[in-house]
Length: 264
Image (cartoon, rainbow, N blue to C red; front, top):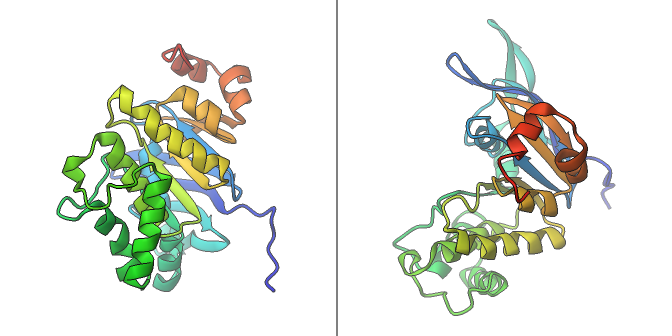
């Protein structure tokens, strides 16, 4: 039986940098996360939060630093003829890492021409090679877990925004990821629909799903997370437990940001 170091982080990020031309979006990002933990990332718009998630899920490449996912090197520091660079893992390893992570987008990104159940079954069948009947059974199980039993044959346009986002979460879970990333999962929802999505994410946290959540919902970020990161200007200004970040930090920039959220 393989020995597993339970204290080792499932996600390790060291000195990650990312630029778009002369714009330095991520300047020196370092943190780690253990299996079963939830990390909330907060900060003003333009601070680099979504870019960080896109880098960690391979939708963008990084320019510097190290990223390890589930014990595998995704990218490590390297050198080139022009100086410091990065070296990405071979394609096979990158695919394994990609399959071990899931991303829930702001705007659902469901296939409009497919039913809810078809949306859930597509990737498990085509990417993982699951039997169609097994994928459909898992899809129905996940829809029931999301409170969407009976919506299997509905199309995305027939659902509310909150229901569509819950389908998006179920679709990500259908791939059995080890880490689930959320990029502002409630930003496209009306306030009255936000609660139903946050309730689902809280339940996932209770079930010890490892998650990284970019959010503007401060009370939610405080209540659901084991760790909180506050980003501004492409750097981590403060990080720690929710109690430290929201109550004890003393950082002036963080206090200024949180003052906008009186309910936090």
